[in-house]
Image 1 (cartoon, rainbow, N blue to C red):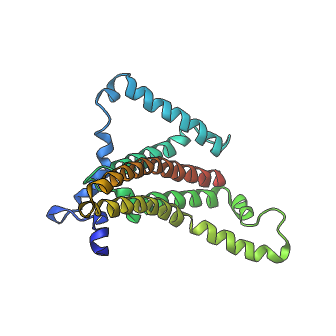
Image 2 (image 1 turned 120 degrees about the horizontal axis):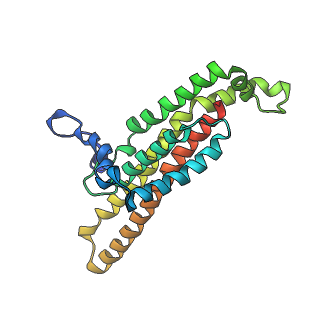
Image 3 (image 1 turned 135 degrees about the vertical axis):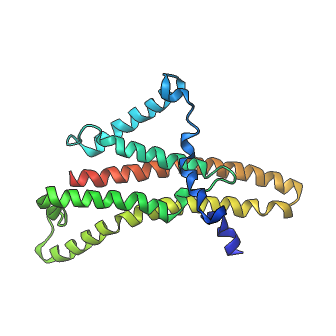
Length: 224
């Protein structure tokens, strides 16, 4: 039962090739061709979203942000958002529900921030390990706690995104499997519940994309 339940997250495809990972690129297909060549409603809508995100991320990074600094996190937000939404469609592989993908996004970002911070702002990184006003007796413990908290950041970023996407999908699958054994009156109630859950999952898809991008922005602001 559990093996069949989790088979929806199995990244195995035909020809012994994991072709379903290509679903992460399907977001480009949903952008109409006119988006790339002329100004239109779709382009203006995306520009409005990007402008809003740019303002928020620039505030988080602070005045030390270089030109184009926020574009990395806006692109990250859009990429995760497309994958989260595509995973809600039937028979579409949810790439963002796998640690293989979420860790591939979180770990290189965290590692790049750490390398940049320790090489260019060593004193700041050392000072960050001991919060201001910490008693001398607790300093070794605070260094250990802050170091551990820093090291597990990519894991928490990856697990948060993957776990939230898996939880919603599993709930939808579990409820959907009960349909054939229900009466028509209860089935209508189940359909309404499924629609409400799908709406909730759409909100979760946006929120988790935003949380991932915001946390990555905050981690970068600590090393600048």
